[in-house]
Amino acid sequence: MTTSERQKPVFRFAPSPNGQLHLGHALSALLNRDMAEAEHGRLLLRIEDIDQTRCTPEFEAGILRDLDWLGIGWESPARRQSEHFPEYQAALHALIERGLVYPAFLTRGEVKMRVTAYEAAGRSWPRDPDGTPHYPASDRERPEDEWREMLAAGKKHAWRLDMRKALDLIGELLFWTETGDGRSGEIAAEPDVWGDVILSRSDAPSSYHLSVVVDDALQGVTHVVRGLDLFPATSVHRLLQVLLGLPQPLYHHHRLILDDAGRKLSKSQGDSGIGELRARGTSGADIRRLVGL
Ligand code: GLU
Image 1 (cartoon, rainbow, N blue to C red):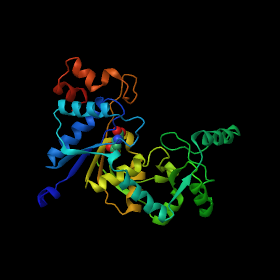
Image 2: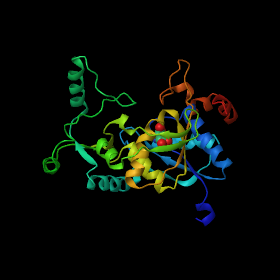
Image 3: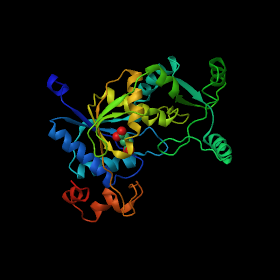
Image 4: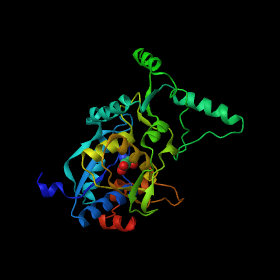
């Protein structure tokens, strides 16, 4: 890569191959391409396939075909997250070494039981912006020699960020620069609303939050353009960037495409699927119009 290439703005489209692309993805991909062109920047494609139970090579092939059909070009090769688990593990281990992450042993069912019992008394348990209950504090308070023994005995666990400890360590408000369709300007991050987020699971060595910040940094991404549904997650990303000493990109969270009932599109919605629209004779220009570009 030449020096002038290295100085160019870097955009990325980062779909997960766990379903077919729909109009919402088309908007995201087209906006990334349009903005990269306007800024004389580069466009990368990242396949976010850490969830190997839901992501398939067939869906990935479908994504490449749809992007090609939409006339969107990207720098080859695309980065496939499942080929980079050691990089995410290295970041996780750096946080474990600093005591900012702890092993969480409760299953989803056990957490649910605790929450239900607590709420039966008319109190409400804190939930994250996705509606998932915060993880109970018991594992966080477990002494290190005890959890090391449990790990040595092979007990199944996830790794969670100790949010309180991380925020105490940083000791200042974090901000990001936003240019998107919702709130814009300098946005104060609120990572605490997420509780102790998962950074690695027993069945997937990295989480979305961890791999996205590691990759954005490793790939030199300067502009993150993605849907407004990920606006709240940016708070966690800013915190992880600071904890891991990574640079912060600019953020642009764009409007979402909703279905007739006002719901966010899902990957199983056939009639807004790009493949389905193509099969019905829709053109690339029609797609731009359909997503309001
Ligand atoms: N892989 C995520 C998705 O498909 C997008 C992640 C991102 O753009 O940061 O929703």
